Image (cartoon, rainbow over all chains, first blue to last red; front, side, top):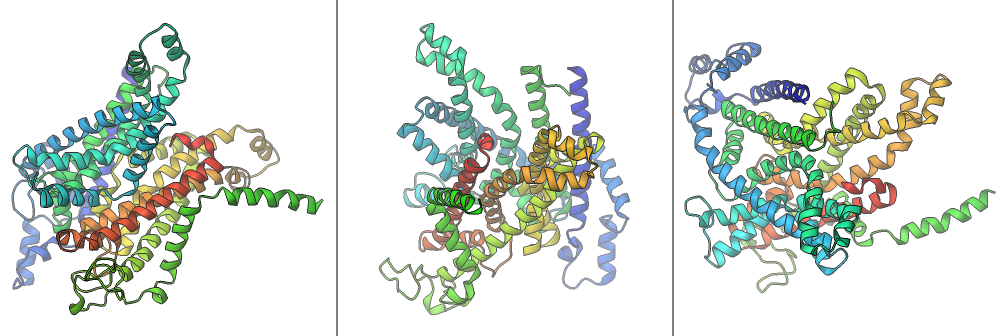
Length: 304
Length: 290
């Protein structure tokens, strides 16, 4: 087990280094930020001075080395746009994304558990059909459009909720709902199919023969076993949430990391893109690492 | 003997055709048709502005006119024409991306599965990383890095899109590698390339087709999201995603601008998913877990 964990951590570190190189290379290929920053009247010498000041005149490996060295003591550089430390920018935005993301994940898991399990128990009925329809529609309709329509109905038409931004708890309702809807179809489908398999197994039949109540059989005996295969999907689902966060934060003008990234890409702000993507990569890798370790712990057959 | 075989095949084909998912195939057929013949079909050029016709509602709403069936946007551009030209963009992005990803992923996956060893370990680590990484991030990064254009979008969507193919193909090849027919081919001295192409590939092609069909919807959705975020194909080209985005702030006055492109996205993705499900059940029922 210890060996397995160490090997997985080493692999994760190597992956991270590769990702950092790719991100660095891509960011540098992104055209010249000096041209975007410099005033229209700037002379060639001015541009050279700015370039030197930002360290953009050094060779690429050198720039990458400096980047790594600074990274090792927590210095991720300065935003080219706002001239503020990237860590400060991210620090401001991160809590907003975490609170949005966690609420959406919690809601998404609860709703998809209820719907997925119900659909599996009522296999073949209209309830099952309804859940399947919801999953199919959820996978096909563009999430950003659903979010726009939700704003239109609940904010503009009915005035129940604010259209965008952050502040009161009411500001959370629409973004959290939209983001959790993003992951609902996949989770629901997985829970339903996994649950269908388990409900057909011998030990569930035994539990029923023992005379346990249907509720106990389904929600305790069956669900516990049905959840294990879902672990493998957790990593991929997490990636979906990150994607969703970028889109949903943009629609709702939510001051989170996703919107920061989208803005940084538009403004060609190298250090911000680098840091944000690296941060997300670390989190995605950590989640996948945890998933692998939990899986190996739950199911001892899995070893390298 | 020849006639007997044909006689047996025709009813089978007919049966298969009858069970064909008619509605999805019809929708996809229409979309492909209008995408190809967009220039001949559209009533107006997609970017022709007409300031007197701004924000005309669709024909079935009061104030709408039959000259603009789905209405116009805030620049007076005919929505139907733009959606038809948008189909061309969405479909060509999807086809190109899926072609690139499936070729690249299949080659990598088959090599990894057949050759094994260090190469396989390395390739599968890269594949795992690519699978875990959110595709939209790389797409945004590339869109920002190289500037938004058709090529960037295709490159961005292909950059990680090959991973599911590689993973799937490796698994299939691993299963087939130990089969007798592969061993026999090796005994008579076939080269690895010949074994892979002549003996293994025909056995995995069904899985490949299913995976390709199922990813049509996904690619169209990501392309739309990218265009919506402004990192896709730049205006004035009519892309469904950017049309939704353009209509976003006019929703209270002109709901049709973002509704119809969204419906187009939804219908095509839905049809693609249905067709994929159907193909999977017919060609490769083992994939039902997906």
